[in-house]
Length: 191
Image (cartoon, rainbow, N blue to C red):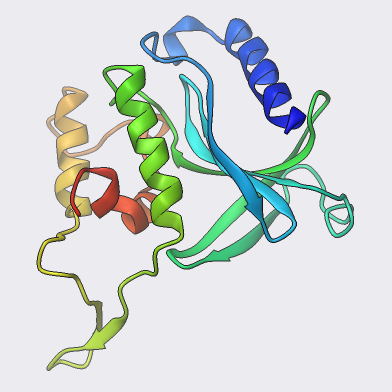
């Protein structure tokens, strides 16, 4: 998989050009668990500024119709993920679905790599089925050992970490809650 080494090389060059205040200095670029997925190459890209799923076509057929910035949805057992199309002069066409849009929460490379590995594993585990409760509203069935992080509490904690008292937080520092929510149990050590 020569293209994977080109992904690493390209993002190492991008790291060198990024402002240092926009990256986590404890992290480096890494490609994690790249594999064949329905005629495409899929894995996790870890950078000091984001962590996301990276999808690259083995053949450009079907991808030629997409422009840079277009998006398409891929279905996985864990749910639907939207991939934004891009082009890199070193490794060609790709789609990226960010899971973390900033990396300030990670203390070191080992922790970020564990999250990346768990993310790709959890992508292929079916999401909990929806069930109806007494008020007829659908909810996700959650195994006894797994509880999701309350997004409101998480946003409140992020606000506090940023030193804000109004409950808001800076959007550029946000984590994609929808994608993270699909993986929360596995990402944060819950089995």
